[in-house]
Image 1 (spheres, helix red, strand yellow):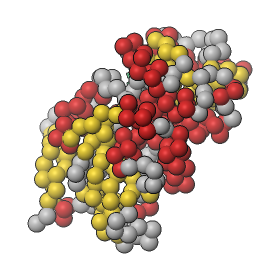
Image 2 (cartoon, rainbow, N blue to C red; image 1 turned 120 degrees about the vertical axis):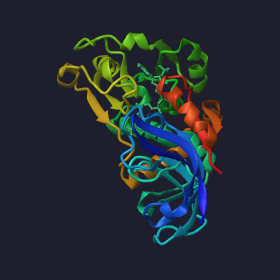
Image 3 (cartoon, rainbow, N blue to C red; image 1 turned 180 degrees about the vertical axis):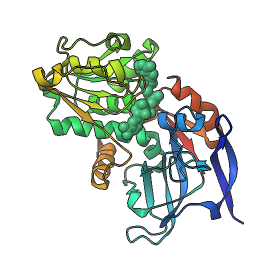
Image 4 (cartoon, rainbow, N blue to C red; image 1 turned 135 degrees about the horizontal axis):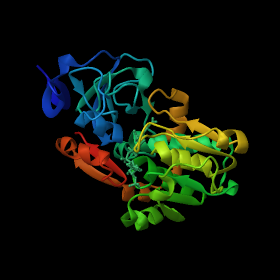
Length: 328
Ligand code: NDP
């Protein structure tokens, strides 16, 4: 009977448990492509799933992990054949479908994106869902018409995964990036990624005024709650904020003032069910707009056996940049 290493989440009396186990290949779920997983990553959502702090996992037992990169072993899908190099982000991986923290995954071929030639499997997962989401946010700002000439752009949760990648990409594209962080000790790190200014996140954390001084033409927000409300009230006339996260909370205590008096737009960013064509654009752009030296500065590598121990740290805001997980 073939087995492989995996981090399995099980239901327990008081919540869930997570452990590195041998998983039986016969228990993989349906799918037309089987992939040998080489790299995965630790995102905020993985932290929630592994610790059981939020109900990310919807089926038990579950293999955790929301994204992977690897090589196709078997396929009955017309787009894929053995040996193809692929990326998978979201689509319920690690939530409703057995996920990425495993040496093997079986998924729908429709979920897969071809690994661009200029991105290695390790780099793809150093970018991971967090970095691909940052790219989706940048694309949304561009589509709205926010250019470097429009004015500064703010990035919140800047020392985190989404924030670090967004900062590096926006700086490379020529934007004046204002990075907001709660960790003053990461100022040099953020400047190294290209931030022109680093501000204390307390400037954005109190109750938001309906309208405040116009400070930026655009923003990428991974924090939510009062931070997002403050970002909106400080956004310039006809600017936009791309909202992708909830690190400080799911609520949004704002008013309609920024929308109806300044024409500000709130752009929602979802990576999980994002259509394939937009994913392909995002990964192509990541290949050209994220410098490999910057990605290396952002990235720390861990083994599969370290994931359970580190999962709580990302929820505590103690992880800088991105964590890439070596699977096999
Ligand atoms: P990280 O933990 O790496 O980054 C989050 C950052 O937010 C922290 O590093 C910290 O930055 C800041 N932060 C944390 N807690 C607070 C707080 N209480 N108040 C203010 N700021 C805080 O997570 P990721 O980058 O992986 O994910 C960020 C968010 O984006 C998460 O909520 C995640 O669920 C969401 N997300 C959403 C996706 C989508 O499809 N919409 C896809 C990927 C992520 P600093 O120390 O610099 O202040």
